[in-house]
Every structure is written in structure tokens, then in C-alpha cells.
Length: 70
Image (cartoon, rainbow, N blue to C red):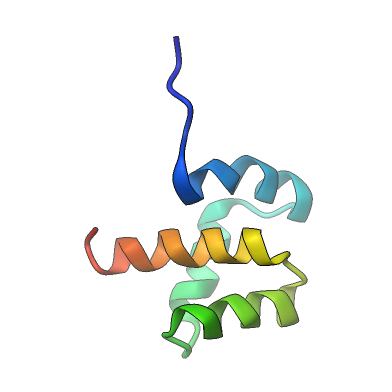
């Protein structure tokens, strides 16, 4: 029995399928951005890379949580 992934990471398979890039690439883009605030990064991903709000939000939330050590 495999555990269901919950939280932001639950979106990762559909993000990779829909946008054709691995999650590691998206996280690298977020980390390399000069933007640091959650909603700034979400809006940037939506405007510059065409991500939907939920997908952008999940990527940013997961990446920023890693940055803060949570």
C-alpha cells in the first residue's frame, strides 16, 4: 500500500505532465528568481511561464518551505 502524497507535492505529477518540465527545474527557476515573496513568485510563474494559479502556488509553497527549513 502506497501513501497518498498530500499538500503541495500532490500537484507535482500533474504539473510535470501539463507543462513538460521536471519539478526540479521549476524549483531552480523559483530559487534563481530575484523575487522572494510568495505571491510575487506565484504571479511571476503565471505571467511568465503560463502556469495556473494552483500549480504555481503549490510550487512556490513547497520551494519556500524548503528554503526556510520546514
